[in-house]
Every structure is written in structure tokens, then in C-alpha cells.
Image (cartoon, rainbow, N blue to C red; front, side):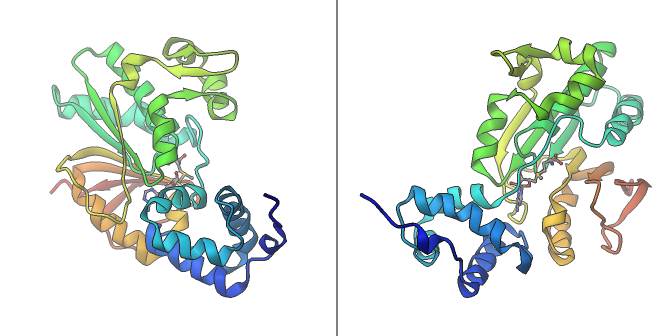
Length: 279
Ligand SMILES: C[S@@+](CC[C@H](N)C(=O)[O-])C[C@H]1O[C@@H](n2cnc3c(N)ncnc32)[C@H](O)[C@@H]1O
């Protein structure tokens, strides 16, 4: 049946504010008032897919249908990521953190959490460095947790298949590791070697929710997600995740982020890299 989509050309201000509030309530993401066209563009696809007539109708649909919360969250989150994003922090992990761990805690499995993992490039980058280190030091072992609020990206993480921009930096800056740990999977695509993939546990998790298990980590990567949160919300997330960081453990944030001013009991090691007090 033909349906006019003219009504989808405008998202009125009142409805936009209702969506902003709903996005914040479900994800903690704060959307600026000048991002209406971005929100509209993302919601439009969903409104069309459901053959609804207006954004208002879609708003009521999301609020009243639990199952629609998943695709709604999938459509409003920004999932950009790629392997070895911000080379400086990977250099720190490779040359300082992993050797330090092995020296201070011989025999103890290194445990890390990629806490807003998107499609998994961050967790897999870490796994590649850990595997390289393990190949050189057979008493070293590691395990990685990777989580995201978006079901769509967690599903992509599990497949571990990557191509295009996602792997460019990896391929060009670490060609030997790339050919050792990535396996061709189609004309353009590569998958992460099975031995590495099985070291990562992917799960859905909202950073504002209590953490279900009692796992403790030596490293938490929480990168390029704080930019979407207000300082007060960043503090709420830190209060939930920092108890999971071992004393002396490391927390790493994203390049355009800052936690200065949030009194979280962390000491700055270098830009973007923080250490929890040894206790
Ligand atoms: C831009 S990506 C960052 C990916 C990766 N950490 C990196 O730095 O390349 C931000 C991710 O944060 C996730 N996210 C947003 N709000 C979240 C929340 N409340 N809980 C968990 N993940 C969230 C999004 O779904 C998205 O995949």
C-alpha cells in the first residue's frame, strides 16, 4: 500500500524533546538540542520499516513495546570504531602494562574489559597484543570481556569478521601481526583467528546498570563513550565500574574525553591512562 512519507520530513520540537528524554532514560546518552536532524534521520528508517505514519506514533510505539527498545537503542547509538584506534594507548599496553603484569603477578591471568566495545575492534586489538605477548611468554595468559548496550553490535562482535576502514590501521601499521592473527574470510573480509576469538566473552550490558557477575579486571577500556554522557552521568558509570578494577589496575578513556574534575580516586599515569590506588 502506498504511504505518504511527507509527515516524516519534520520532527517537531516537542516530539524531539520527548525522544531526547527517552534516549537519556534508556542509555544515559545526552543528545544536544542542535542534533535534531541526526536523530530524525536515524528514527526515520525505523518509522518506515514499521509502516508508521509519524514520529509521534513511533514514540508511543517504543514506549509501549518492550521489544522495540532494542532496535530503538540500536538506531540511536553511534558505533564508530576501528582496530588499534589511538596508537599511543596500545603502545602503553604492549610495552608497559603487559610486561608489568607478568612481572608483578606471575601466573595470574590478565583480565580486561572493553566496556563499550561497539563491534569488537577494541577487544580484538587487545586480544592480538595479549596473544603476541603470550606467544613470547608462555607463562602469561589472558581473558577479555567485551560489552555494549546495542544488541546489533554485540552480535557483530561475536562474528569477529571485519573489513574496510575497520582494519586499515591494523593492516598498514602491523602487517606481520595482521597476517599472523587475521584469516581471510571472503574477497575483502578477514576474521580474527579462532584461538584469539575464544578468549573474548561478549555480552550486552548497559553501563548504568548494576554489573551481574563479580569479575575483577586489571584493565578497563572505556573509550569514546563518555563523550555522550554528562559529567554527572560519567561519575555514575565510574562509580559502578571502578569497584571492578583491581587495586593498581588501569582505566583508559578515549582521546577527546576527560575525567578531570571527577573525584574517582584515580591517579593519572599519562594522558588518557589512569591507575587505581594499590589499596
Ligand atoms: C563510538 S563507540 C566506541 C567503541 C570503542 N570503545 C572505541 O573507542 O573505538 C561507543 C559505543 O558505546 C555504546 N554505548 C552507548 N551508551 C552505552 C551505555 N549506556 N552502555 C553501554 N554501551 C553504551 C554504543 O552502543 C557504542 O557502540
